[in-house]
Image (cartoon, rainbow, N blue to C red; front, top):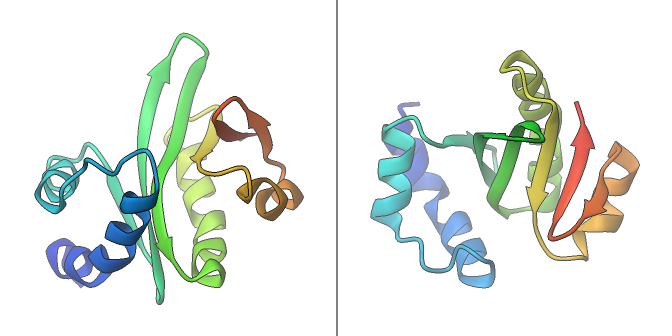
Length: 122
C-alpha cells in the first residue's frame, strides 16, 4: 500500500498518541511532510503504527521511536523488524520515547530506562 494511504489509515492511532505525549504540537501535515521527505519512517501494523527517526549524536547513532499508537500487540509485533532495520542502518541503540509504564513492557526485550527514554543496545 502506498505511503500516503498507509499514513491516512494509521493517523488516528498516531494522533491519539501525539495528544498524550511530548509531540502534541505535531500536526498531521507536519508528520506527513517528515515522512515524505524521508526524515521519519512510518511502521504500519494491522492495528497500530510507529514512527522512527535515525539520529546521530556524540554518543552514537540511534534509531529513535518517538511516536506510536494503536494496539499493544500490534506495536510489539513491529519491534523485531524495527530493530533489525536499525541494525542495517548502522544504529548503535534503539530508543523509545514514552511514559514510565512502558518500562515493564519493554524490559523483557532488553530495554532499560535512560532519562526520559528507554534504550537498547543493538
